[in-house]
Amino acid sequence: MKRIQTSVTPEGTFTYGIHKPAYPVHNLRQQTNRHILGHTSPAKPVDNRDNFPAGNIDVEDGNWIFEIPNPFPFRGRTFIGKNWADSMAENPEKIRLSEPEQVSLTETLKDIRVDSDLIQQLPRPLLLALATCSTDPEDLKKLAAISCPMEKNQSGNATGLIYKAVNNRPVPVIHNHPLFEAVANNPYLPDSYKRVMVIRPGAQGGSEIVGDWVGDGSTHVYEYLRKNSYIPWGHYAANMADDAVRYSINDLSACDIQGLRHLYYQRSFVRIAEELGITLEVKREKYSEQALENLRLNITHHPDYKRYSSTTLWGWNFGFDFSPSLYRLHASHQQIHQQYAIIPDEVTAYHNGIEKTSGTLAGYSCGDLISDLVEEYSELHDSDFFSDFLKAITCNKRMDGRDSLDSSLVVWSDSNVMLFVPKAQTSQWELQLMSLPDKNCNLAGNILEADTGMRQSLDTGILTAQKVLAGLGARMVTSFEYSRRPGKNAGLHQPLLYVFLPRLPQSPGAFSEAQLRFINGHYPEDFARACRSQL
Image: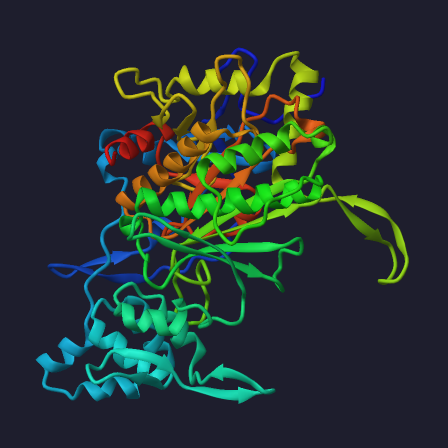
């Protein structure tokens, strides 16, 4: 019988496996190399005799491991060590990261009476380490001056960069690009330096600004067109402007997130309307909330809408880090920004070279993988996947059988959306945000089906997720959207889904994660409880 590798069952429960290791091991070792490893106090030797057993080994009662199929089979499996998770269940407040250590080389050198100009003599890896770890603006200003020459005013504040002509175009003079990036992305660098190095329009190149949002007087967002990007269908980025510097989630307001998301909705709706041949009144201004809703309704009521099948792409990498060995560990910059595009239904295909075409390929959208699952699950079980999934979440039971402990996976919800911890987390701190059925059991599967109230709930849920994770100490988070295509897939009961994946210091990703095997040290219910404590 065909099976779908999902943890969701037609009974509205999660299914999982438990490994209870017990097995014999034949000892095939040829050599024994005994050594004294060191001594305790007083001088009692510690040796390695336990590493060299004399005979075979019987593992009779190994640590139990839970194996949880992800609800979405293409996302692999999660493995939870029972011993680790049991200790966390007793103290879920331990699920957090500590604040970064305060670091100031300038003050250290002052304390030992060494000239702070020594910073200029540090080897490049140490410069880079200081640029990413220092919390002292004086350190960072010195490092910025090492990375590039600057123009300054009489108060010593940075006012501009020094440029040179390259192929008849002005290019900033930068002596050390990795150091420049690391310094410019450190939240403790004074804002005047951040502005001239990376935030002021034009500082990072000639990308055109084609939209903006000015909010309550403290919010300002620019929409940049990224013409020559890795996203080939029209790539846009909504960045906080130079008069609204946001390097921390704690600094991000509800108005900020509204502006960032409004530009995403606006650009997507305008592009789709143009593709459907809807006449737009072109004005050099942003759409009001009501005008945006009217445009959305014009699109969904258009006679060709049911045949429209391009879909949206939305993502956000928050957080930046650089290792001294020049490994970039996350986003290209710390400043809060979001990226989006429209993914076409098809792309022209080739078999040999670049001249002769051979039909088309389906354009790739990760939301299509969920659509395939919904259809396959219905055929196999004669049941609706997301109805069963929602029931499994809301009626969740703990895997460890301890009914006295909290069993809820839900972090926050309103009438439109639910923020929850997935049963099988693919990041140790993964959260998901899902649109909920309305009173008629209809689901918003993409932003074209999200009315004003739903869009506001989505924005609030995204901000809540980021605030919760930041409250626990997360400093790098990848977020993205799974959306259902409109048109031919409009009848699928598939909600709009957002995924939030923190990158933790001890979980860089290795061969297990490359195989979609995700290792975890806590039960999802205990992480949900830790998240709710941040609300």
